[in-house]
Length: 310
Image (cartoon, rainbow, N blue to C red; front, side, top):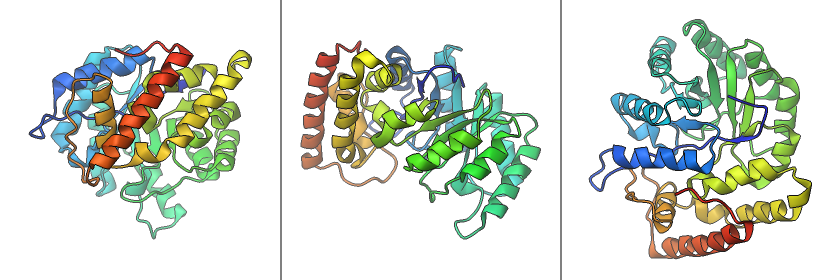
């Protein structure tokens, strides 16, 4: 992934029809929507994509479809590990790589059980690297099936192999991120922060960019933040954007990703709110909260004179 400028890497949604089938027409529009917003790359087949609710065939279909729409405009990364023996995981990593992805993402919580040590995890990572030739990889500290964080020392060890080019960090800990950036510094590697509460500080500390669910509400705002976080003339506006995100964290996480699909509907995007993943009930009260978020964002969007993705 390019790391010379800060970039936003959306964690892509998967649109479904009202009957639960993948809506590939809406996926085309959604992919274009991220690109129009200024995304520096795309993370397909991730938790926001409801990857655990897709079949293996559907995962490959979604990745191929996104790559076809992107047509080389930006890099695409996608998850390639879903548990099981290392040999099985390696086989699917190769299948994902064969679609044309820039890197294949390894889910940390699927390479070792929660009770297993870091030493066991490290061994599994190196076993997987050994069985996947020279395929570029990345890590995602996914909260499902459980969140396994990679320590700064571990990340340094993996990045030094030259195989790791992407890390989606969910530690929620700025000190940890700073230490990861200090130890795991190598050309071609980028750490992308998922935690928007400290987004500005993370970018200033050296993160390559942001990879957050907020981009499934207003991707152009996250791109704006990546472009302007250190702009001396925009610091008042940057602080306002950071506070807006902090103030609205809760509503954006309620029954996600259903809420983000509803928000996109409010923005005029043609997609259903159907979600395969069991995330709770989208109640009228939650809908009202999202309506309020939409109104607040519309005002902010006008104040910043943002170019809005169509």
